[in-house]
Figure 1 (tube, rainbow, N blue to C red):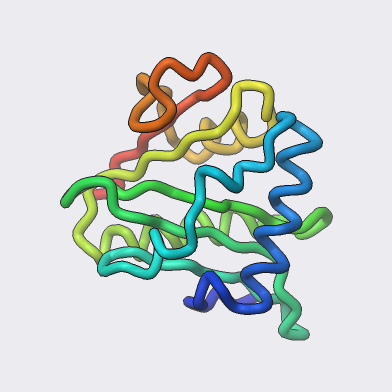
Figure 2 (cartoon, helix red, strand yellow):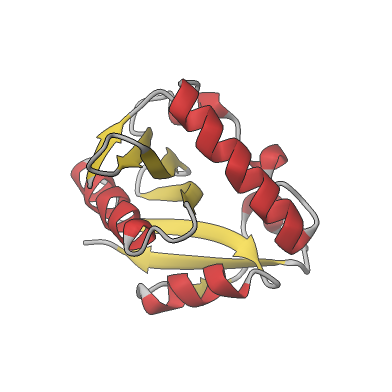
Length: 149
C-alpha cells in the first residue's frame, strides 16, 4: 500500500468520496457532503490523500483542513470494505503530515450513530470534546481531538 497526496477533484478522489457519501447516508441518513468542500483542502497547510493497493487501485482517502494555527480537522476519512488496516494507515499518515505542518492537535467529527467510526477514533487515541464549529448544538454529532506532538 502507498498513500499519496492528490487533488480532491481528481477522478480517484471523487470516486472514493462519493462512495463515502453513500455509506454515510446508509448509516446516518445524511451523506456528509455539506460538511466537505474540496476547496477547503486546497489551501496552505491542508491536504487530501489517497491510499492505493499494490495494483494502484484506490482503496481509501482522508484529508485535513486548518481550523486554527495549531488545530486541523480530519475530513473524508474512508476505506473501502475489506481493506484491512487502510483506515489506520491513512489516519497515521494524516497525523504525521499534520505534525510536519505545525499542528498540535487534530479534531474530527462523526455521528453518534456511526459506531464503527466512533470506536475507531477512540481506539486511535482520540478523546471526546464538546462539539465545535458547525456541529455546536447538533445532538447527532460527536467530536474528538488528539494531541499529535
